[in-house]
Length: 75
Image 1 (cartoon, helix red, strand yellow):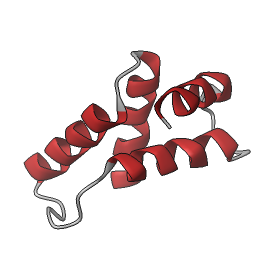
Image 2 (cartoon, rainbow, N blue to C red; image 1 turned 180 degrees about the vertical axis):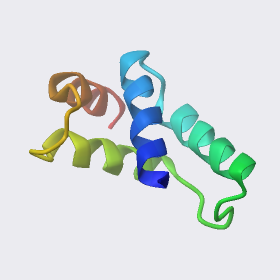
Image 3 (spheres, rainbow, N blue to C red; image 1 turned 60 degrees about the horizontal axis):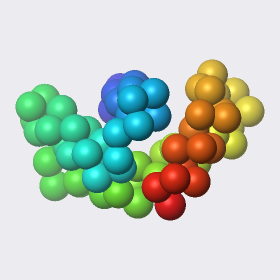
Image 4 (cartoon, rainbow, N blue to C red; image 1 turned 120 degrees about the horizontal axis):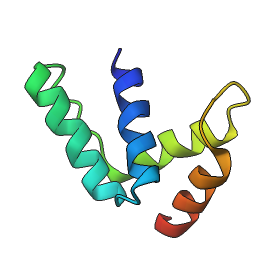
């Protein structure tokens, strides 16, 4: 379930050009509100790694061009 949340937030971050730091904060806020594993915080690097995975996964339905541009911009 948390992977679905991360992908959903990441889709919005790419679509609206939200920086990885804001994306990580939003993911952490969602998990905090759900009281899911607050000791395992998402970092900027985690967000970028998730984006890279989505952009290279052949089964991912994301807009790979948009993801790659977003990754390149914030890497």
